[in-house]
Length: 511
Image (cartoon, rainbow, N blue to C red):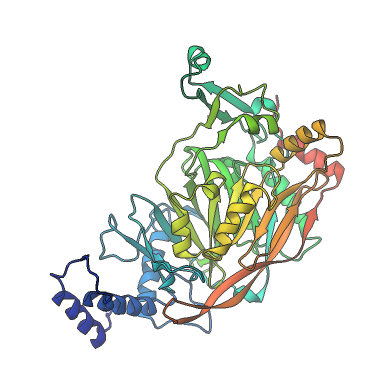
């Protein structure tokens, strides 16, 4: 590949910066005029940002890029995506690129492509349209993933998501206690509150993953009676294990060409390591060794950043006082590994990221990264009660919809909603049950609850991407940004009682 000649303006600015090499980075001064090198650096930053248009995205028809840097980034990302088992039709990607800026020390700073620019605040992230300045890879690692195929434009067709709020119930015995503090420490009121670990036994999963595939297929078939296409399938936090996830992903790859991605919470990652993970797969067509088009799946996994802590209030709300001693603080038993998030390109100019439960509420370490990249969509997988704007997921989703302007979807299983409703109903016979398994919050202030009552088994929502004009702090314009809105009302997916009972009975493990 022949590299283009460096523009004269860049070499002149770089020479001027080198001449300022002995200037102090910071100097206490009462003068309002900034150091000369500030203006030089700003000029180089703006040039780099404008030169990076389209970096990280698949170039769609009618918008082929002659931008050398965008093509170079495309090559880097493609090489990472192909690094693992390229002959396998289900790739597990683990050769990640922490930064597209190959010359900068990644233990000092990282750079990745960017989705959109915030419209509030005066921070470095408001200065650029196409590049995100990120922390060192050891602090928080960001992986930008994009499929190697030409995607649909956002406005061409709505993105229809099939939300499966599974499991529908969790028995008491699924919660396993492992006290750490001794009885003497519990009795000693002068010490910090005693604590222990809790874990979840996935009693809702079958030993044969094919049973789970049959259930998903039945839901898709029923959903398509109400809508023409399903473009994505989602499960909430800790709903699946790797075996069930892999079987579902392979089935969607082979039999549902309209499905663009699968997203689920899992008790295992791609390598079968135990923990609390989000798994995501995108599906795409690629030319095979014989020249024919082959349908592939590429999967990545990301661990939860923060442990769930069950306190007395939650134990009471979810009727777990008999399983977990309320005198203890109960922490989710899971390893905290390398903090990372995946930014996944969908359609022509959008990306989504995934958070797991507490990661939405705890700003460290990922919220600043999310604001820098400006993800169009944030999917939050939960094991929680009803999703209402007044509850904590609604409050924290509002923060991200305000800055940087994400559209946020929180999504929980129906299991803890059921336990919560039963507790409240026992206290007050007039209590009105809520079966909101999801909450949609976007940058324009729209908040919509997504119900899935006990008679239904899944829900379909449609979201629509529309162009959005943005301006950087210095006034530079960007016409390629996209904002997503939820359109219409959620569609309830309800299997016939006979079919549902048969399928759910087949899923339930034999006791």
